Length: 144
Image 1: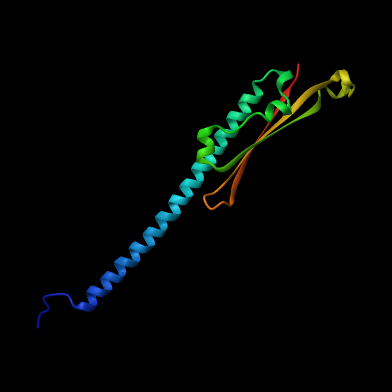
Image 2: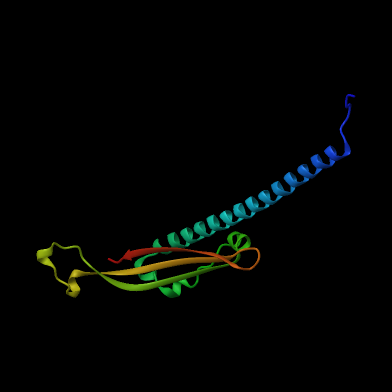
């Protein structure tokens, strides 16, 4: 006797396999979408920190102060994309030795350079409100 159709058991097994495959693929796509969103947020934070650093380092030496840095804020478009995005800037004065040969090593004030350390941090949360990351850029600006 020849079989001409499929049995109900074969049809049920095929449906179970198809639904399992569909369920797994939906979960993989959801994870990929979350990771893509997290990468977009990180890239936006890096660009925001880079823009803030560029604005600060282009200032004249006398205007590069902590008071001026506190006036900076995240751009409106960045603030909309980054959940609870915060910009924090720290400017500290420092002194660096001028480059000299070992014979001429002298640490008197006239052989030192005035410098300012500029630290820009952008922190942000993910969509659940959990801290997702912090981007930190550091630059040294040497005075006249």
